[in-house]
Image (cartoon, rainbow, N blue to C red; front, top):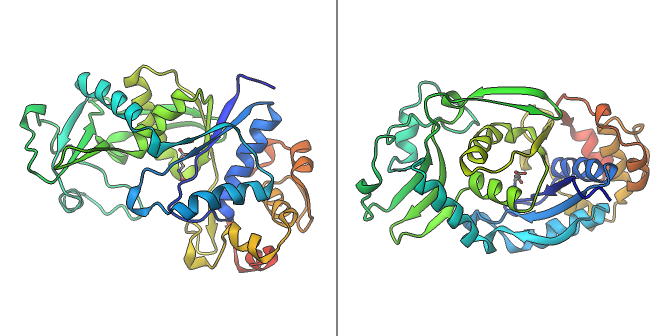
Length: 316
Ligand code: GLU
């Protein structure tokens, strides 16, 4: 085993895994195993109101059903708050955070143009706030990371090549934690993800391309926390026939549905393998066969369109 290469699965149990998530996890697994490396499992269950316990178990089951396995102990984010808070404190002490009292409506009203489906760009309204200005009676407060004056961030993506963004245009100062009026801190996805990827020794972060915008923010956190930077590899998004990210409106595409209907995982792997340029359309294939022929260069950088006939073929 190549003990230097480590990547991870990081499902969010806010919904069921669908065929698009399965494709990302399959490629993650094939990449790691073809390099003789490790795959860790991290359950990203910090989004409290939306996390459904049943979905946690279902995610493990769905992946196992496809034959995807993982190494070491599962990392459960909801059990790691102490670690996140201590890294949050380091950022706080370094003076890179400030308290923000803006509501979503305030931020929306300050946008120069609507950014449909994108994150809101924060106009840095509260950047001047001193830590001493905190009024704990305000029920909602967000801790934002100050991106500074030179907000251009560049990295090399192991799938898409060189990427550059100006954080002023895509996020502005971004939230790393929220605090309620009883001073309880909830750490954001951006910070928890960086702390965990670093703590678990991840050498390559693999995920879908809709998170490229997060990667730029996370790179700034890596630098601020003094962590060594992993590699990043983003994969084309799986979309419905309308070009929008696969969702319920496109029909059922949950792996658990196929599992319950008794569809063979080989059919699903065959379709996924075909979508990655690894086999012909319509074959049934097992994971080992896909692993033998795995080549990242076979995967097209175009979005993967799942239309009704694909869903039907898969057995939905
Ligand atoms: N939990 C995130 C998701 O399911 C993935 C986060 C990551 O890979 O960094 O979209």
